[in-house]
Length: 187
Image (tube, rainbow, N blue to C red; front, side, top):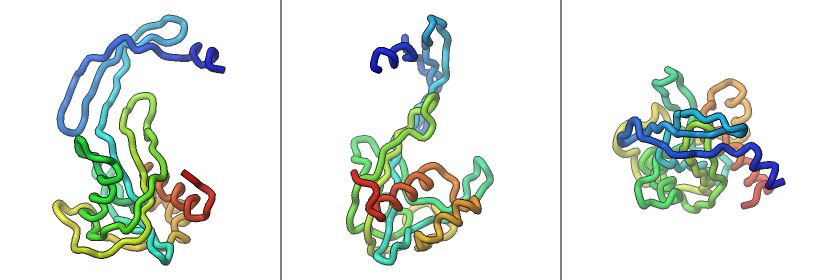
């Protein structure tokens, strides 16, 4: 099986930086595909992100109603943000919950780490399940959400079907958390 995988492996001969700032790095990779064809392919590098699924004892999840200007669209999202240099993603997730919602999680466990758009974008996302939270203040800094609410997990499937939940981190986080809470997902 491993030998078969090598038949489809792309070879990277190098990458040159085209654009770089605090939020995004754009590169041009020199790649060779199976069969020997060689060409340049854009690669986007983004900082790692950490996202939290905070669930209380009533099986409600902490969600934020946010506007995303790129799509001019509103939706419910989980709290989260970019991992600071040298920071552990689990620490980032807990910090972001407190900064964005005013709640401090009581316990934290890793759910899953994934790449939301493999093939062209490098942006590792780590998701955490946080059980319980205490209100410690108001959200800090820039306004992150129009509303912050505890939503029953039982309402999540209908919210997804309506299109009120549509971002990858939120969808993946909620689905993995549901499995973990139902005893199906271990890890």
